[in-house]
Structures are given as C-alpha cells and as structure tokens.
Image 1 (tube, rainbow, N blue to C red):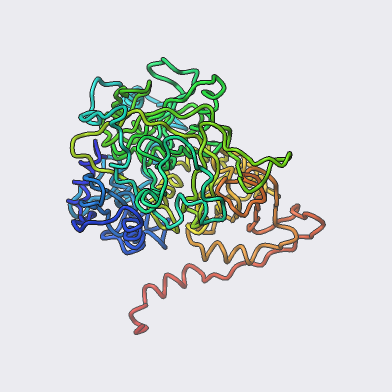
Image 2 (cartoon, helix red, strand yellow):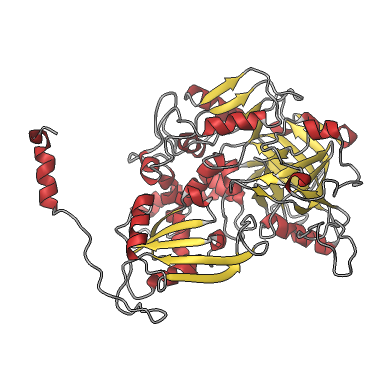
Length: 578
C-alpha cells in the first residue's frame, strides 16, 4: 500500500506499469478515447496466480496507467487507469506478487492468492476461532492490535491543505475534469429539452461552455458525508465515503448524483428533513486503498474508512475541512468542500411529461437536470433531477495530481475494482448465505446484471433458496439474473457454466421470476429502479424438485475418462510423438 497518490505513481513507474504522456491533450473526449483504447490492450505484466485462475478472459488486459502531463486549460497533470489492471490494483491493496520493480505486498501469500489473501483476512474477522492454548492467545495479540488500528485518526494538518482557495476565488474550471463520452451532459442529444436548466443561478451556458466544459465530471472522488444526527460528533458513526459522479455546472456549482439507495442519498434525506443544507467533501487521491474502499459494499454501520484502515494495516489520518464540518483524508491530492441544497425535490423528473393538471413540470429550487452520462453498463444513463452542490473551498497539495477514470464498455478500471470486491467480500457473503462455495460476476453482466453461484446441493429446491437469499443480501440484491450450478462446475469458466445451464435446465420448470427493486441504471426495467429478476436453477435435478407440474427424470452421468487412463497418457505422452 502507498501513503499517498504520488508515492503510488512513483511505484507504478518503477514497476513498469506507468506511461507518461508529454504531448498536450484535450480533457474533452481525447483523454477518455486514449484511455479506452489502452485499457483494452495487454497489461505489461501478469497478476497473481489466483487472478489468472478466476478471470481467464481478462487477467492479462488493462494496458498501462497513464499520466497526462500537459492538459489543455489546466496546469495539473491527470492520472487515469491507475487501478485498471489486476496487478496494479493488487499493488494498491498490498497483495501483489513480487516482480520487476516491485516487492511483494504486505498481504501477499506464497501461493499467489492475490485478492483472496485479503478475503482470508476478512474471513478471520467474521468467523474468529477462540485460541485453544495460552501460546495461541499470545499469538493472537498482534491481530487484536491490528484491529485497534482500523478507525481513522484525526490530525491537525495534512498535505491536502498546503494550498487553500475559498469564496469567490474558487474556480472549478481550473481543474482538469474530463468529458468521457460525446453526449455527456447534453440532455438534447438523448431526446430531452436542451434548455431544461436555463435560468438557474450559477450555471454556465453558451456555445463556448458547451465546447470546453459541458459534460465534464469528477469520476474518482471519495464523497464524504455524515447523517444529520451526527453533526458535532468528532467521530461520527455514520461517516460514509461513496464514489458518486459529480457534474461540473459552473465555476462554483456542481450536480451531485447519487442513487436513492446510496448512503450519501440517505444522509441527504436526513438533512432535508431538518431543512438544512448538507455538508459534503470530495477527496481525490490519498492512500492507495481509498478509491477501492469508496466502491466497496460495506455493511450498515461500518465506515469505508474502517475498511481502508484494515487494508492499509494502519489508520487513515483525517484533517478537518476548512469550510464544512467534516474530516477528509489528510494525504489527499485535492479536496472540494461545499454544501448540497436541501431544497431540491427527490429524483424522478421528466420535463417531457406534463403534470396531471396539464402544467409544465418544474425542477424545483436547489435542483438541476443532471446527465446524461456514459456509464459502466455500456449505455448512457439518462438525465434526471439531482441536488446542486455549492462549492465553498478547494484545497490541495502543492503540485497535485488529478486522479480520474473513464467508465464504459468493460473492461475499464471499475471492472477490476468490482472483481476485487467479488473476491474480498466472499467471506461476508457466506455469513449471509453459508451454502455458497464460490461465485463469479461475469464481465458481460456489468456486475448487477448477472451472477454465477456455485453450491453443494443438499436437498430439493436448494438452488431456489440460494436465489432468494442473494436477492435479500445487501448490494447483491440488485442482481437481475442468477445462475446456480453444482459444485463441480467452475463458475469462473463461462463456457463450463453455459454448458451445464444448457444441459440441466428445463425452461418450464427451472426458472424463477420475481418482481422487486433493480439497479437504477437498468434501462430495461419497466420503471426506474423497479422491475423483474430471473433465477435459473442449472443444477442437476433430484426427486422432490417437481415444480409447476413438471416431472424430474434421472440425469445421466457426464462423460469422463478414468483417472488411471489420464495418468497413463500423461506419463506416455512423448511416446505418442504428439
């Protein structure tokens, strides 16, 4: 792990994982187009053995991390694709294998477990075994001391406040925010009125703005919020760090995008109920573990900063903000402070549909029409109403680096962050659904659309119990399609999963369709955030699984050579001259 972003950049450079681009580039589309091409090219070095086994299709992709040193309109360099390969993310989280220019990470194991080494540490936390002897108890002390280091610690000063800009001197356009896709921030391009935000104070408009700043976003910032009830608490238990996109609207205004199910939105509703604006801080950079932790599906009541301390093997130092009552990572590169309006109505706004009385719909005070935005699903997420963030300060270290990412058709950086969660959080998923042996979130499913689940089937309709348990398990509950397979199936081999699906499934008997909440980004759902989910029982059927009047016959054995024959031909292979 690395204490700050610049240390991480230096480590990537030494490890042969970084390319520096000195040519001047445009933050509008050009940086994103370069990165999209690079992210789908071969990575310079292979990751851990476990990454190669669990993701045979993509383990060797990701290209290089890119540091753009000359960006039009800003004197701040842009770092992108830093987390866009297995090896680089393993370096960031301290579980990489030793290789050219880099030593083994502190969480690395001799068997090349990669993210699974972190999962093993998580498993010890969620299922601790009582030490049987005094010696074992003494040996447990270092682990307990490590747990004591998890909470963040407050410090008086930090790198992120070497330069402080407040009030009317704040100018967000000096930051090298990027536009990723052509229609980002252009409602008219996707069939909405292009002037729906006209007349909102503090928003910049016009042809020059459209060319140079329309649709530019913060995409790799940690959004720090607390529940209104915790205001004044020096260690607020509700402290949350989420990774939400934030759209540039003007020199001192932004649009805060969070789904209604996100903790940030829940905190906002608590401030809205009080009739008070909500303090927000956006931290960019910091310890190398932080961007991953901001994306992690933490259980209620456990802060992402606790996870960061766990992965970092040491507390994350926090410094008080200069204009809002929040703390942020002291080693951040850049911090944006401000307040989100409490006046904004909730999301759900279509200016094309008149109200019941025939009047024209209004955004409401403190709200803005945010989007569209090219998303990780491979499609644009459509515009909607979101609250405005009024920026009160920008602080940064001297000579900062601006970290960002592009999302789009995978694999991109968010793909590897998601695969890390798949491995690291398996022990937590097993505490909810202990019958799961392993699972895989295939790339084509964009994480919330599909999951392959491996179980050891013990009784009739066991697979259906697993489906419903997953649909009630935190962020896994958004999964649209679940395929459950037997224990001999390799869930990381898509061909193996599809072979057993096609062989074992009778569509009239083995499909489970339920209605419920779905991912906000699922454009196929009949309503925003509400639709249907499909469970497919691809296990071998047994007596007692007669469903909907459909019988179950005996399944024939699968073809396989005897082990002794396989051993013999392996021993004699050279004799065959093949």
